[in-house]
Image 1 (tube, rainbow, N blue to C red):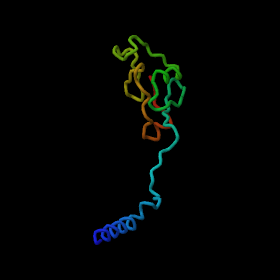
Image 2 (spheres, rainbow, N blue to C red; image 1 turned 180 degrees about the vertical axis):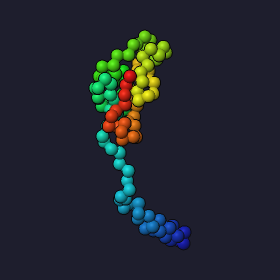
Image 3 (cartoon, one colour; image 1 turned 45 degrees about the vertical axis):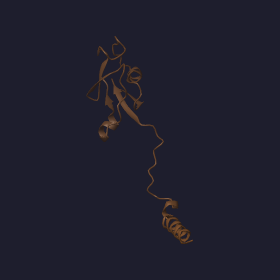
Length: 111
């Protein structure tokens, strides 16, 4: 009988002591539903490309036509410069938006 009383007492303490578990907190991190877009520029043309999308499609929208030989990224003939980084257009992805405000406004240059 005393074991039952102790068990009930422990359950009451646990349930009443953890009332904060049922109170909604204000510091919940919510993810933004907006898409992460990167601004790319070439020859005076500016586009918004989805971060992680194929670089080949973004280059086509900009009017940049890299040469494709192997279409697997082995030969390197499709290499373009995006914001100073060299990326193979046939297998590469659009990089994330830079943190600097000036680059966010101007966009990453594709050469």
